[in-house]
Length: 364
Image (cartoon, rainbow, N blue to C red; front, top):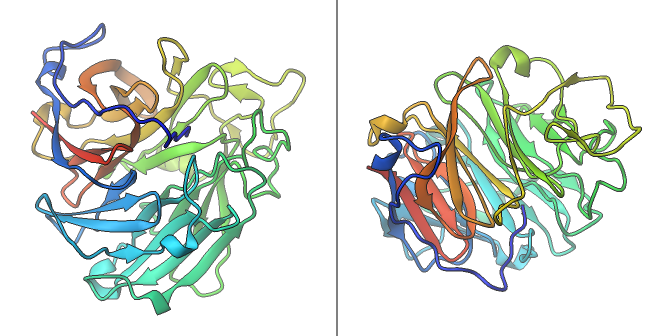
């Protein structure tokens, strides 16, 4: 993702007439402002056991808690002293253990003071993190300051997954995404319930997976992978397809187009092409992946995958069945400038965060 902290536009969350590809149902959707004044929020989420709560990750290194829309004064976590923040670096996401209600374990991904990736486990006392409980699970040396990935999610298999970018610069100069001996450009997973477990490669050939998620009903995996010069992409894998090693193509392919002539993809995994792409036109430049909506507040959105573009704030949705495009992508009547992430709460309601400090909720 191309995070820019120097100049931020004002977020807009008003309903506007649907563009081409819109529909009457799309026109009913809008984003409601639920919080503002936050410090560069880059993610929002919650454990399934805590309805009414939303944990908002601030890029400089703080996690704050919204309870029924009200911001708690006390941070849930504050590791600003450990985090290098700015550009694409910082505290980038949080994931809660599926049994968080009992074990109070949660996990964060951040770039440290040297700019390297750390995945660290903490425990909480339900109100705030216990600093002494910190345990590092993954360290990855970063050759450049960009393409850090940073998404953490628990999969339907109970394993913790982390999305790693290709290490940065441009064009993956070290060919790391296709190199299975490198952690960069990968989707990695770990059994966090077994001491001494090692990380596995679940997918490779990723440039910068800026947000991936599972549909909580079908368990399909969605990845929004940021492109290089021309194409942004959405990849989808069904549960049975997730059981094999998948190659998402970068740096040989960008979207469905050849990027590196003369290079053959690493043949260890199944080569995957995106279900949807969009081009760098009209200001679009960097995908922000999202979620399949499974909440109850907006019936017209149910089953649709929402994603957007960081640079323009445009938002689209699509419906996939069996990892094949069923309808869309359609332009949604919503816009969020500096669109840094989507998130979902315990009930499956959908949220969007803006680097200008705002958090929005999908409404009708």
